[in-house]
Amino acid sequence: MNAITFQDPRTNDLLSRVGEDVSLLRQDVANLFTHTTRRALPNGARQLADNAKNRLVAGKLYTSEHLQALKNHVNQPAAAWVGGAAAVGLLAAAGAYMLFRSNHHHNGQEHG
Image 1 (cartoon, rainbow, N blue to C red):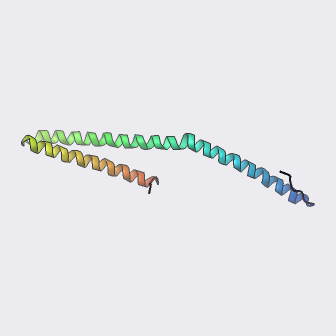
Image 2 (cartoon, rainbow, N blue to C red; image 1 turned 180 degrees about the vertical axis):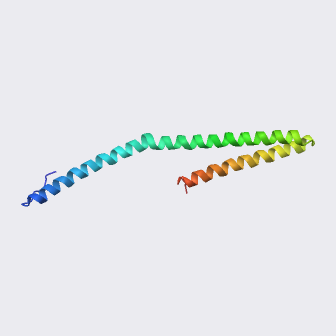
């Protein structure tokens, strides 16, 4: 590509500087894209997965504690105990899901 030259030295200097700036901007955009695809996105996905895993573990512990309390304090037939345990498990899973969705929404990573 041939450079356009003008009689005015200031115009030539400004055009040259703008050309250099555009070249640097292209390099910066390419570097940003490379960094984002190789580092930022995988790290964000890893953090999201760890967060979900931690919340599921917390939900499991919560459910386990409540099932133990039910077992120790309620002397009911086996069918009723199993039904209660299933209800507590569903409530804990729903709570963990709602927490995960709430965090996902607040981080601006909502799809759809």
